[in-house]
Length: 541
Image (cartoon, rainbow, N blue to C red; front, top):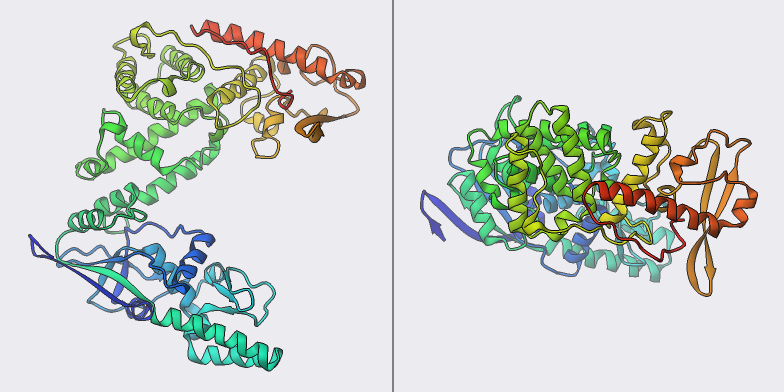
């Protein structure tokens, strides 16, 4: 296939072992704008399992530009390559697969020791169990029955392992293992990979060609596309992926370090003045001010997360009800850089209103578009209220949750309300201290949201079986003194003692009423109708 602008595209295929040799010789290189290696152990093992069975693993894409020079990385996996070849092609698609293959099939014993990063070498080595005929990542037993797959494609290394097998096992079993190893070695050595060569053209052409001919879409993520199209050469050059990593690192202070790149990109797209679903990702890279747009958006994301953490006590990313709330608040700080106190107070009210009303769940994209415009007008001080209400809609809360589940916005609303009550009722503890009392891991998050952990009171939920139903009972461990435990902040009418624990159902009923009554008043002040629930599960209380 020939394209305009001196672009030539040719499909081809070659043996895997030859392509790996081209990498070692510097004929195939990794451009500096490539994203980092992110594949999991499971993905690596599945790749070799597919090759062993002769399954296709997808085509690769190589680009040989006429003029553009993006530089290349000398390091692939744990290996530092000494490349000096002046004629090379860039690996545009397939970097994750190529890194996996090259790292696992390169014999570290035949490489200059100074070129190996031993701190990560073991992470990349893949073994094959000759008895179970399975791939795995770690050979803690050091058994000869577990052969590193690089030994299968290295003749002398394979002979060494064959002798070990013959010495340790009888003739019949060693022959069985050796034949299995030979069969896998043949699969690896003879395996052919399809690829497409692009000669000439610009990086924009390579990206467009890739997006059209590759239906998998696994490597061509929006982040990769942006990184490729906006990469700046030099030590001071702009690398989108690095800036994303820097932002996430700064957000760890607020327990938001795991914020998805997709959400960050949506914040950037919305910072163009249109809500993100009305912005084409590739259009960002064509902006002359893309770098400035990104850096300013990252600054506003930081301010938005800081607001969420300090003002509404979203002390962990898992407690954020809607990603759109972060996107909207980021836009607020773009348009209202000063963030005066009156606007911040109204913004806080907007957060609670959108949380309790299930705002972003019940509104369609067209209404979200109008909501974004109304919110922008508020940030620009063109209107006093940020909340868009379509056709005089009446907002109603969802049912009081019968169990805490972090996939539920209603559960997050309750959790945040309980945290707010502790903050409002307890002067002894500040926001950051909450991390000492609230736990968000999968094992105990449900229970501790209902009873914050104070020094004088410890407790653990215990699973019991009643009539084949899974329910929770509670084992409280009372310390010597509970005088400093703030019962009011935790919606408990009377001190927890042994007598009250014997009547735990009464305690739960009382606490449910106290929480729902207080939450009802709070929600009604927001202009939202509160929906009571007559029944609740035993677990949260």
